[in-house]
Amino acid sequence: MKLPHPHISFFCLCVLLSSSHASNTIISPVSAQKPCDFPAIFNLGDSNSDTGGLAAAFTPPNSPYGETYFHMPAGRFSDGRLIIDFIGGIFASLMPREEYFSKALYTFDIGQNDLGAGFFGNMSVEEVNESIPDIINKFSANVKSIYNLGARSFWIHNTGPIGCLPYILANFPSAKDSAGCAKPYNEVAKNFNLKLKEAVVQLRKDFPSAAFTYVDVYSVKYSLFRTPKRYGFELPTVACCGYGDNEYNYSGTAECGQLATVNGTQFIVGSCDRPSVRVNWDGIHYTEAAAKFVFDRISTGAFSDPRIPLKMACRRALID
Ligand SMILES: *[C@@H]1O[C@H](CO)[C@@H](O)[C@H](O)[C@H]1NC(C)=O
Ligand SMILES: *[C@@H]1O[C@H](CO)[C@@H](O)[C@H](O)[C@H]1NC(C)=O
Ligand SMILES: *[C@@H]1O[C@H](CO)[C@@H](O)[C@H](O)[C@H]1NC(C)=O
Ligand SMILES: *[C@@H]1O[C@H](CO)[C@@H](O)[C@H](O)[C@H]1NC(C)=O
Image: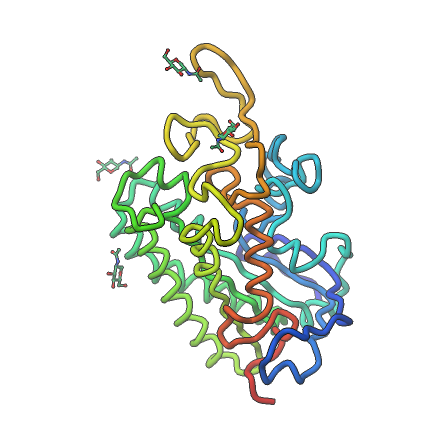
């Protein structure tokens, strides 16, 4: 089977998932079953989960992107690895074989750009909120197309708390919650996730032979803003690599890796001292440390609906 032109951006991280390490920490009915034998993973998402598509098609990120893990820019919009890298294991990459398309795991991490484009595109919070059903309908249509190409195992992340990100906080003064996040913006993200979850329920009805796992990444990310110290993090709403005349260390005119001019002096916007204890990398995206934190929690299935761990994501329900 040849893949015809996909209707959405198609970034592919093709990896072998080791099926030898059975998870022994999960107590759930599925743990009695055999792990899924995914020969490949196809990821569809924005720059929070892009391992090089945007860099290949447009502008690759500069140093200090990549500094923590790759020690050079590696096409990722982080200081290091992304959640998808931890899901796949970056050394296991290989080109997909034809039969992999139906057996593969398809992961989705979508929403932040759809909402962000609205907020920065002169739309009010209410207008962006009202555009959500349209965004979700397009998402469902794209998932149907991918299903029709043979995909059967879908692992769908919801969108994160966009109101906790410096690029929102620095640009749109608004009411804050106890974590210091912009409340109305997070309300929109939560409404997006509600509609996304409903869409996933509908997809399960439409395609009973496929497995759709909805993953609550929002809650895991939000815990990093609510109680960062508990998890060894600090300054979650401050960009590690940024520059800004504000408490968020962010400005759209002096972004991470760019040449900035302040008081007549030029400098490259660089990294903070300890990205390993930081949540936000460049004002928009998360650090490797945050990605690892999220991966460790979501891979167990504790945040999945149904409560299926990553290795079992070809299963439809808890009953065998
Ligand atoms: C932004 O919104 C204002 C008020 O609705 C409108 O007058 C203006 O034309 C819009 N600008 C753009 C670039 O859409
Ligand atoms: C967003 O729209 C939903 C209805 O889809 C509504 O219940 C909610 O109050 C709205 N939220 C905001 C922040 O406008
Ligand atoms: C730029 O100049 C202003 C006013 O003299 C000063 O307050 C500010 O700290 C300077 N910024 C930097 C980065 O040197
Ligand atoms: C803000 O970004 C600069 C790089 O421009 C970095 O050196 C500094 O440590 C950052 N501040 C914080 C509080 O992370």
